Image 1 (tube, rainbow, N blue to C red):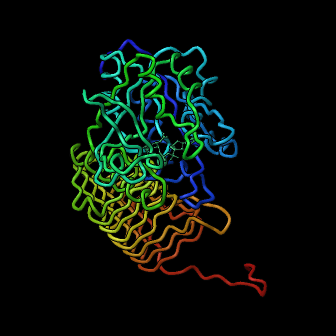
Image 2: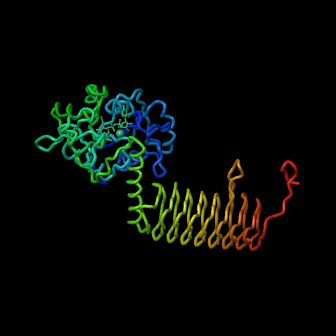
Image 3: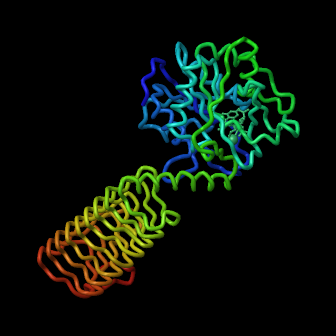
Length: 426
Ligand code: UD1
Ligand code: CA
């Protein structure tokens, strides 16, 4: 990160009505690759050095947003009592930023694709040009719904015109406002307080700060984002899928550059927080969720699903295998059609086709431990809580019911049980 003398704070706007989502869940809390949509701009702001991040929310969403960021103490919330537009939303953060002097970065909670690199470039140019306001723009094929960038004869930023207010020749412009801005604090507060409601919508537009800044003889500057897809915003669920695809490709690409083989990135879904070491091989149609970790030389897929799992070095999780909150030891193999839930498998375990760790008794989850070198025959069901000792073996179709198989022992078949008339054991 470039050295800069300015302090940076961020405001992330997330108090809009989001009617177009038609959802009972706040738009910015819709999950995208294992994180709420809002986590992307929040983390981007943090990655460029924002020391304080204020998320502007609707009163009825405040508790849910706070809860989503409960472990991140640089994130605070501010309530915008009524959604009266983006300028009004930034003003809602004023109290939380009292006394702050420096560059105020504004991001949109519904625009998750903006990269740290583009934010860096925005902040750097903002400082170099001593601008009072700088906006990140992008060139898109289909500008519908976005504010259009209007440049003056000198090529400098003249205005941003919202689509609802734009005449036809301005609607034709394909350079659009990403919604991301750098603003000079504390001067910005007076500028925002002077913004008037739009004639078309009655909203207070943050984009109107440009005209006011220029009228005051101060510089407003526009910086193009490095990639066109960085400016994508989510207003509806089709756009939610669109940004998910962009972020997913980015994650896959980063893993590949780090030494992970992804046979078919287009059919591979890896959550933002998953960790993959080098020489991991991911076969097609694999889904890796949550804070999963796949260690060096492991192979996963095709058609595998990991959820908060750890796959040890050299292990293989094959086709149609689901691994949930389970630790799979080094060189352990589960090649076909298995469900491994809430388990800890030692190294060199062989898990036969169709094996199930039955972790749920209808009310609670229970854990299973499988020792080093154990071998589970095809179709074994282990009803947790259970322990299978090191080197133990089960025959095909064996059922281990809540208990312990000693190290080196062999279990075959289904234990005989008799049930009373009420289903109780006798
Ligand atoms: C906004 C920009 C537009 C830009 C686009 C990029 C303005 C006036 N328009 O339009 O130029 O091209 O984003 O995606 O800034 N919000 C609040 N409180 C409000 C209104 C909005 O917090 O009163 C939040 C929303 O939750 C959302 C963000 O601000 O996260 C943008 O609001 P939205 O209504 O989606 O604006 P757009 O029409 O997309
Ligand atoms: Ca939007």
